[in-house]
Image (cartoon, rainbow, N blue to C red; front, side):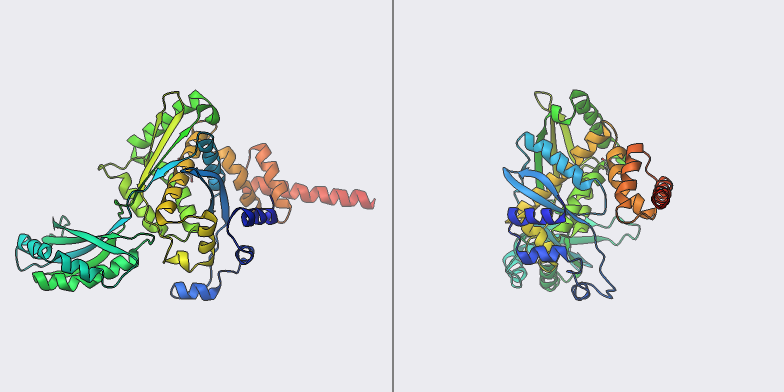
Length: 420
Ligand code: MEV
């Protein structure tokens, strides 16, 4: 499809309006004024390609997944992984809770930590009432108190951490949780005589875990030898941190690109994902791979994903709003389940390529266009030069320049022959 056909298809398949389509068509739709409202000292707008990953079926619902990424192959790989999963019924995902933690750090206690803790717990109702006095969209349900001792070289002593457990519902929740922590801290200081220093959410969203599973038929991924190679690849990612980081980077290629297109805070998602990968004390693969009864490949991905469909950039950035519309998700939980499916599809596609022909062939085919552009090709020269380099399996700026100048020479010859 060309751009017009893609946009027509989107308009028919989703709830996008004519206005939305016009926004997508107009590269200046995210104006400097938008940028200047969002950040400080704005000087312009930085654009990324936005594409659509296809074939996603999650919990029996079909999704088109918008992805914002500068990396060639990511969208093709996600679509390919999703297609293989679709042949076996798609992804099944679950996200039981949407609880986030807000931390208040209490230091310099003039009383014993145990007494302080008892006073705080005796005032639980009042503390929760104060926490909930400012926000209606998210709700502090409970809190817990932990006693910690500084383990840094500064030996700052004991501290109490009061952790609000907040149901963020359809919001990511960062702003509301931070406000709650700030609001309750003076009450906690008065109760204990301690000093509240940090009052901030934790991005380690372990009560927003998402779990996703899929079966990938051995025939669809190239046979039993490929299944076995994928299990070898997984064994390295589970066992060795140097491989685990790259393996997880591949998973996040998909999750970040889809989350960004939907206006999410991808730094928060990344930080939590990598901490979760090290939850048992060693950094490991976020996915698990094993052989199913009949020799097909079964994959699982579990990670925390804190996202929102109300508030945040998702409700002010015009393209993010469109991203959410294309996804058609009705809740933050649904969004996080789709993102987990994208991560699993992305990992399957990377492992399948790595376990067979390697990733460079497919990657370079797409990358060739960028190389051709870098070498000075413009207009249809880009496709011509990229195609030739891919056929030769030799993608480099030097080769692109050689092909470009041979094209120029051929044109000169043609002109010469025509005139003579
Ligand atoms: C490249 O951006 C991502 C991969 O390196 C992931 C992986 O090795 O699993 C292909």
